[in-house]
Amino acid sequence: MLDEEKESSILGAVIAVSLSDKHTFSKENQESIKLVKGFGVEGDAHYGSTVIHRSRVAQNPNQPNLRQVHLIHNELLEELKDRFTINPGQMGENITTVGINLLELPTDTILYIGETAIVKVTGLRNPCAQIDNFKPGLLKAVVDKDSNGNLIRKVGIMAVILQNGEVKPGDIIRVKLPPKPFKKLERV
Image 1 (cartoon, one colour):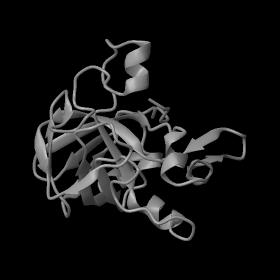
Image 2 (image 1 turned 90 degrees about the vertical axis):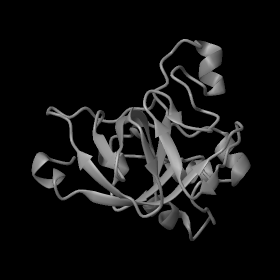
Image 3 (image 1 turned 30 degrees about the horizontal axis):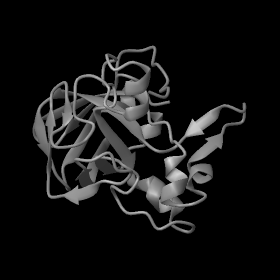
Image 4 (image 1 turned 60 degrees about the vertical axis):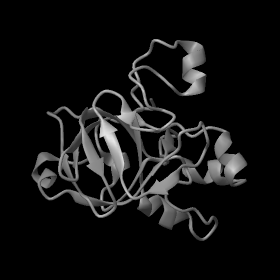
C-alpha cells in the first residue's frame, strides 16, 4: 500500500478521454471531456447524481452515483496486449491513465486532474459478463486471485467529481492520499 512519504511523488498523466451518450460497453475517444461536480462526465450515459448503471437502477434507483467517472490504467492494456488488442475507451473507461497504480490507491484518495478537475476515488469497477461479449476470454484475464484466494479486480477504479474541470490527453494527475488508516478499495 502507498504511504504519505511517497504521495508527493505520485504523478501520472491522462493518455485518453472517452464518453458515450448511450449505454454501450465501449466509449469513443474525445479531444476533451468535462467533469461536473456531483454528476460525472457531461454527455456520458452514466451522468447523474443517482445511479445510472442499469443493474443498479433495477436494485434501487435512489442510490448515490459512486461511479461518476471510470479510470483505467494503460498499464493494464499493455499487460493484456499479447492476448487482446484493446484501445483506450474500449473497456468503458472515461479516463485512461499512465504512471499511477490505480488499484493500489486507498478509498477516498483525491486525484487532481489537469488544471481544475478534482475527483475522489470510491472503489473498484466490478467487471461483468459483458466484457466477454467484447473480447471472449477477457473476463478471466482481468480477474485474478491473491495468495489468500481473495478476488483481484483489474479493470480500473470509480470516482465521484468534487470539482468541475475539463480533462484532456496530456493532463497531469496528482495524488493526495486520505488520512490513515487507509481503507482498501472495494467494488462499487
